[in-house]
Image 1 (cartoon, rainbow, N blue to C red):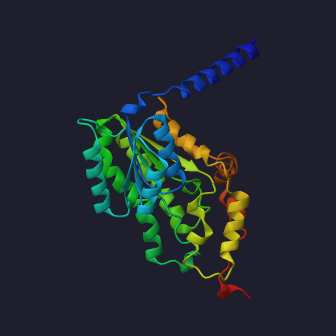
Image 2 (tube, rainbow, N blue to C red):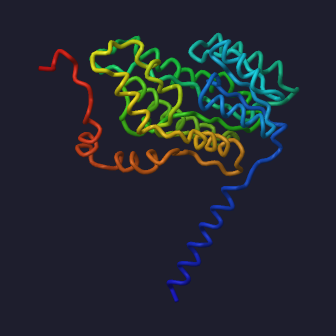
Image 3 (cartoon, rainbow, N blue to C red):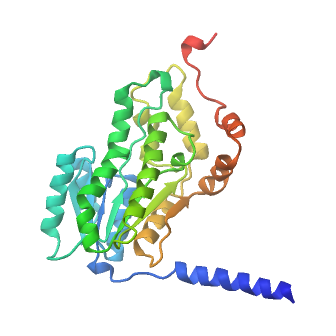
Length: 304
């Protein structure tokens, strides 16, 4: 008897959760979204998808080439704007452009802080203060400044802020500048969510695992390194075997965070994020250290 009761309750709970998860806010054509990092990758795909759904999108691009390509490939409600999140003056100019295009008394439904860079993949002892600053300027301080500058518009619409972190924001399995920047994204987003808890704005974190995007292109992230350890080959091999080609999964997480009536606070995206790395960050440190410490390059001075 109790078995059937418990089984029924479990089925009802999962059914309720499934139905709740599928509820949407609607009225997309009256909603405006600002996205950073739309030159390529996740941001580019998101801008195009939101355009299809009927949202009005301000797509921030770092380069003029990114703007031209986005304008060429889309039509309708996308407005591509120049945006370098590492510069406050550029963010302020973007705010002016957005305000000028918004209808009167209209705010921003969604602010998506997608822009990010990997930074130098060198060992810690090779890195300078500038190496850290370059990555933090985009991944952390750029996100913080975007939230600060655009928050009044998000508050006006009782909207949402979506910050892109990484599985490297939960467990130190990437290079130091990138890992530090993503740990900071997690901490800042948690504080921001709690400060805005009673003000009508929600904050959501996207935590992708390893996907095959331009951010992990070996020719891009190794341009500051010599090829002593055949670094590019190692990274390219890792991307091929470990990086998932299913980048649409990240796009779906973005879409759910923007359109669901009951969005999640965090979105772990990818099987590696949900399974492999979840196990690793729950293991004792000596075990996860052993797993993640294997295969690390040893500086030439220590090789004998």
